[in-house]
Image (cartoon, rainbow, N blue to C red; front, top):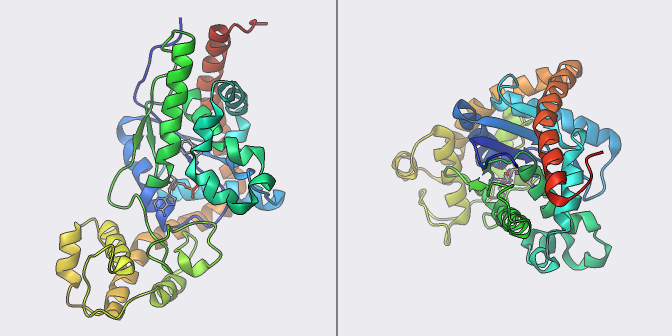
Length: 336
Ligand code: AMP
Ligand code: TRP
């Protein structure tokens, strides 16, 4: 019999493509840290996802270690949570193939991220960029995770994962895959660009001034906030439509200080943009500088990182191998 459905297991990951930023931290990794208290957590480095667009091998290797360092520096405890590169657990690719045979093309055609990323060059985009959400479903279902903490932009992919799990279960008349719940937590599920308050803060934005990277030092953070887009309205107020940049920065301020938006406004309403930016810089530096320092120390010890990742791989494989063995039986593959 397949193993019973959902437990308190968590699975999530970030693509190790460099430029990890404040949005990744506030929208995702910070929530992962809290979830460790009462969940069994698997946090991977999504390197198989990273190669959906061309990567330089040496840079990819460095970025996997840097992202692992960021997880730990942000507070993921490798003794509690399994941290591992996705490519080291073969079940991810294997299950992605199997699930791709259970995913109608029509479902993939609806994915907005592919349309955004492939743009007008659709015919030149890799097949993997198109089928990426199936791999993401495989990541989650391989561990039969009950919960998946992500930022707002991943919601559609999670809905697809739920649909695929449901379709599979119906076809084989089983409850093999639990239907995972997205966890889109907190007030910073969509941190916006510092250059354009209507665009998401993103690793791939050409301008480094659009984001605060977790590796930025205090001077760089101050400079980036100083140069961040502002407006001519007097005082600070929260209006996402009329003042998207002010709303975004106020939101970042509130989240970093762990206060409500109303409390943030009470502190800042009478400040002009430049005074507010200085307050924001102070809290950002206070939060990020210990993270940046620890990241630097860890990056200087690649042997420690690799050992920690090897331990994570072992723990991930222990779960993944069981799922794959049981799954093959459900499908009708010989157990040889
Ligand atoms: P990615 O940078 O696409 O690998 O995303 C890694 C995680 O960070 C995912 O859970 C995303 O939803 C989340 N994330 C990425 N960008 C942002 C953002 N600007 N605001 C909030 N969360 C984000
Ligand atoms: N697609 C996610 C992103 O770009 C990263 C990711 C890959 C992921 N596999 C996952 C997130 C599984 C949650 C669960 O942000």
